[in-house]
Structures are given as structure tokens and as C-alpha cells.
Length: 142
Image (cartoon, rainbow, N blue to C red):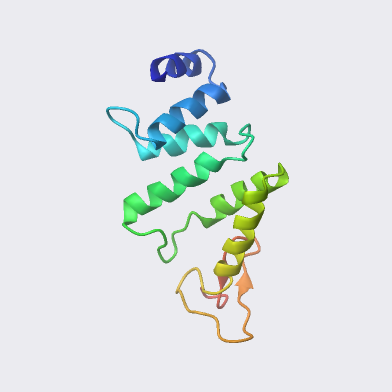
């Protein structure tokens, strides 16, 4: 499957199905030398055409961040904007699970500063990033 998908992608650099196959094989580590980087790269290529709205890309991003930093969240470094974007695409395509997951993540994200990890106090609301709309900050400085 890997060889066929590689040839298809090499012949037509926009073959989303081939890119998806390559990304999923790397993500599931069904190869002698799997790569989380290539999982992200290939699933990102295919995510726009993915009926689930990029579910494998979201998972690949989370795995790569965890692998690189031994934890899913780091101050100032986050895959949240990309994950929120693709969950939004999934929701827009009618995926109920993506809608519920996005709501839950937003609720959690609103509870702490994405930079310094300060927790919100009762009745306190942090400022939402106006660019990505996927993270919240305790102040303009953060």
C-alpha cells in the first residue's frame, strides 16, 4: 500500500487519497520506519478533502507535539490553533463528535492562559486571541 500510494503521489502531487494513505500508515506506525513528521505532512495534504474534516491530521499533530516535548502542552508552543481549525471544519461537515469535542476543548481552553498557564478566578474571563480564536490569554502581555 505504501509503495502504490507513494507512486500515485509522485505522479500526481495533488492526490489526496494517496497522501491520506501515506499519512495514516505513518500515523499508525505500520511501516518499518514510521515518521510522525511525515504523518503530519501527508495527513495535512489530505485533510481538506477528508470527510471527517482532518481527524487523522488532528491526531498526528497531537502525537508529534507529545513526542517532541514529552507533554501535550507547552508555554508559547501549541497545536491548538490548527486543531481548532480542523475540528471546526469537521463540525461544518456535520461531524457531531467534532462539534462536542470542540465545545469541550473551548471550555477547557478558557480556563487557563495559553502562555503562562495562570488559571482563571471565579467569574474571570480571559481574552480570546483575535487571530486564531483558539487560545485565551490572561493579559495583552501574554
